[in-house]
Image (tube, rainbow over all chains, first blue to last red; front, top):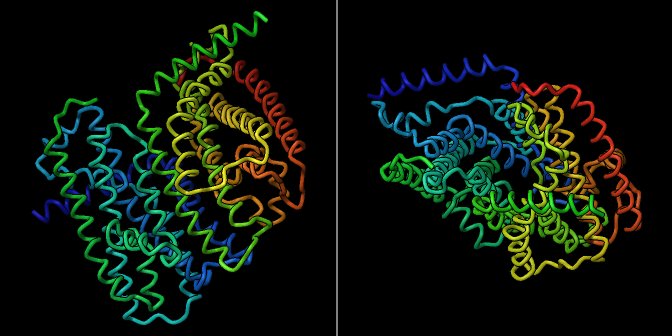
Length: 261
Length: 272
């Protein structure tokens, strides 16, 4: 079973790579646009610090570290789960999800696997460079900190996956709304900045209810040696969030009537 | 007079149809009622933190900064435009042919469409967000001068249309112009002042931006709202900057017409 699914996934990745190679100019342009448009928000941080202002108790490189991690997480989510929403939306509009449902594999798995798209690979590399620059300017990092970072970063990816699936599930009911990602992008915006700038009630929500703080802030805090009990406790809601996405998506597939519209 | 009445009739007919067409998707527009205020809340906390212990940054106070972000969001709802996407699609599919043979200029049709579309934006995006900003967030949204801000927003409305139409016309040459569109939108999002007031950019860049069209879409109307305009050490009184904005709109319109005439010589009506 596992072998079969791995085989399908590898085949899907091969198809995605060959598609990118066929339409290489478009692929390069997509990569360029993804990179530049997502590096806009660190630009604001640079302009703020360039004006002689700062986020209280945060140095430029510490803030950039949060934003670099956020960028890498965004890139990974875009590559591996970014296409689920659009594929689901198209199938719901056309009433063609049956084509996927008829296949002898899990519907959600197939949608995730067949929409892998490497257009954000440059974004990941850009985020990685930013991450390396920020990291080299924040002082010593111990092995324990790196371990904590990896665990929290994976938890952040779970949140991203949860968000993608919740959006895809929503598109079953809110048909053809291309502005759906804007709603979640605006919520994710809270995860891009040091959480101590927000009101306590807001940071409680961004840590435990819609845990967007895990996408950038908590993993960065781990590398800064500030991963506390709250950061570790916030892993649970992240997993719950991802599970909620999976359950909601499956529920919507169950309700799907295949009429299109 | 007859000519003007006829034009008004066309605007009314096209705007009404567009309004009705997009009313079916009004919940799409209503996404802004959630997204606009959420972004504003984040901006509020970012700038409150950045201003802690400071009264002014690059000549702007915190209250002005919050007004700036509120106003740019609201102006965006009134001036939003997709003429570039529409025109490019029409050229690529060859559907532009049906417009080329109509007795009205397609740009005029696009303007009428935009009026209808933005009246919908006025009801489902602008007014709800205005109420939220004023009644819940308590931002000062009283313009320095009502007359100048109305003129400036109208000019920004036209500027956005003309610039986007110009980008859309690249499709007559390169057919699949989505790349050009995306690069332009990216530049516009940075240099129009929507991201951060342009006075935060390095001085040399500010001086360059003085000569580019981007500022007239968002930064200029927002500063007209606040009541003073500075960019790259150049400060202008409000009537002068609005005059400059009007001149920029006229120049862009003229370039637009020139490129349109060149496009018509190239257009084959076949599509791609």
